[in-house]
Structure formats: structure tokens, C-alpha cells
Image (cartoon, rainbow, N blue to C red; front, side, top):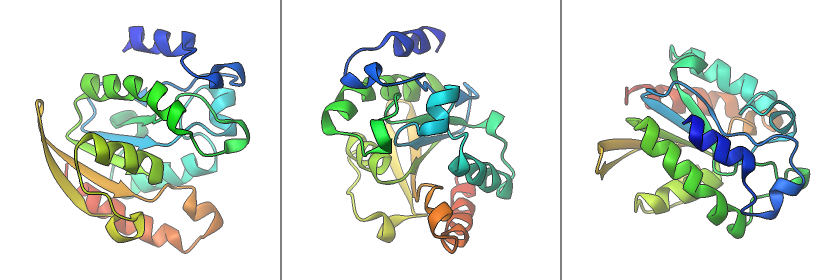
Length: 185
């Protein structure tokens, strides 16, 4: 993982390296049973070089606690390792350039559960594992079993925790979905 993190620090596969403050490789337990995948670093993540340290990170920490997990027990990564300017959506080119790093992280961690946080991670992971995609509003909290070389994995589509920062009623949905996630480990 250290070698991979060094590669990420030196990466210039897309234009985002020119505007980033810090790349955000990911963090957590290298033997995590659960891996969370967001879309891209935000403002605070870019400043600190760590995933989910802003408002959405505080919500993620609460959600983890609600199912008896600590940040140190899971692995948290993003589809993109650098912040898109103005927090815009990732482009197809950026996703294509960056996902080999995410694929390597999944191979190193070998999680039993992959939890997608938001539409971009859902799109990439569902394509990767040949899971039929649908709107997140229809499949959030559902568990999809996939066979891999490393064995059976559970993939769970979750709303991005940021949704609760602008729609507080969604926190209840997230809590319920995390309870479904907890049934996988």
C-alpha cells in the first residue's frame, strides 16, 4: 500500500494534479472487512490529504458508530484521488485515469463488503462487478453478492453522507441503510 500511495502522490495521469493541494489516497485498516468508496476529495480532504474529514466525514463517523464500527476498522477511499476544482463532478477521463489506483486498493484490502457512497462510486463499482445499475433511490441499502477471484463479496449501494448535510431527513435513511450494511459483516 505504501508503494501505491507514493504512486498516487506523484500521479499526473490527468489534469487534476495541477490544482490539488494534496492527493487523498485513502486510509484505514489494511485488513478491513468493509471498504467505503466515495467519489472524490472535497475542500477539507484536499487540504488535509485524508478522506471524509469535512461535514460529510462527521456524518460518516456517526453512521459507523451506529453499527459499532470505528474508522480505524474500515478502509475509506474515493474513485478520484484528487479534488476536482469547485467540487464539480468527476469526468469520465478522470475516472478512467484514477480507477487503476482504486482497483489496486481493492486487491490489497480484499474487503468482504464494498459500500459505495454516492452515484459515481456506485457507477464504477457496479460496472466493475457486472451488477445491473439502477437509480440509487431504488437500490440504496440493498446487498448485492458478487463472485470474485478473492471469493464472494457483498456490494452495498449507499447515499453519500453529504446528502444529510443539505437534507437532514436523509440521515434516517442512511442510518437504516447502515443497519442493512451491518448484516454483511
